[in-house]
Image (cartoon, rainbow, N blue to C red; front, top):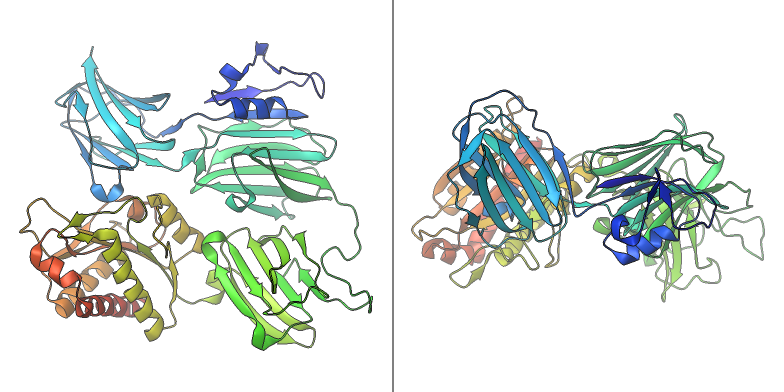
Length: 566
């Protein structure tokens, strides 16, 4: 990562200068398009330029004796997103750095019992691991297949280093002021990938960018823009956040996507008559629709309730209100910026029926209410509508098939089981079920848990099946994340595995603590990973394809979940 404080000598003067250093495309970025984009920005004041790998090293140094690095552990369920480095004694210090697509760890006061070159099982993250030691320092190099943000932590005994890969480094962040107003630019992002919240009480604008990270923290304390006083950029819980302290609130913010970047613009709040509802030409005083920004309510005056179809595309963070007929003579096709806590934008289209597409700042749901004024569509957070919420995760998917054995593909079995669980929960209770995916698509592990975190689910269940080289190994097992102060996950896993065994006749392999499973450790709620059976075992494989097993398995999971919420 390189950070540049840019002094713009004139509005159009190029190249840029930073602390007397001449910036060219080569040392600004290896990506010519990004370099060209940055060079063409007007009024830029602050820059952050990313790299292929960003690192947050949480390991504090201590004094210690020489230790031996004796092993590297990777779990297939993590798809290469988490690696453990095991030692025979306490580790004194670890230095983490990157070079191109390599993460390099230097473990001080150590020697190794590792192979020089380790090629891991098929995964989406790590190509190869190489190790060496010299002068009391063990060097471990991870050659990565993709950009990544890296967190390094050490366990309490200081005998295990956990390296976790997730998300991606953000390409570039630029803040400036031009003839329109102040702006923030996020390169290689779209408006659907950010959440913006304006807090008028504290005069602060917060921008969340899930799945994207930066190295360290940026503080632009002397921005002194038209509306912006200062800017702080840092890594939050699920991605980077930008806190903007404001001089005043007399502005509107808008999104503009151009040149492969997202511009978040703070512009003059010019009074526009009836800017949030359509006015009928025949009856100028009649409002055909309007939005209450404070209450997150869209009100429609002209509609037929019997024709309306509503689709909640929560993974795309949008709700589609299809009126079921052509109302183009009443509602004009347009895009309206709302930009409050829940609603980012409302788009009206006629293709061929009239649709109101509500684009959200974060995952929301809706409630309907008919009044004398029309149909009120309340856009609410899921927790404000549903008493109990579960997120079901279909393990693997897309290019990641999971285990393959006995002519069975894990991702397909996972999907069959997960949909059966969803159906039984919805038939037997009022529990709201969200799915991390419903199509055969590739998702990162943290994308799955972050969806559950954003929804603020009460429970996260990831559905998997197993495989082992010893084909005699069989049975069901459940993994949970251990928590010394909250035994909810442990008790739930124990109850569920017992019910699964009782209902299906599978061998009980138990409820097991799994602190290294990424989807469990990154979830903010009780989370379980189910392993229904072993595809590699002939008897398990025969059961897994039987409809009776699927229904009994789903019933056991469903009943345990319902009992959990009582």
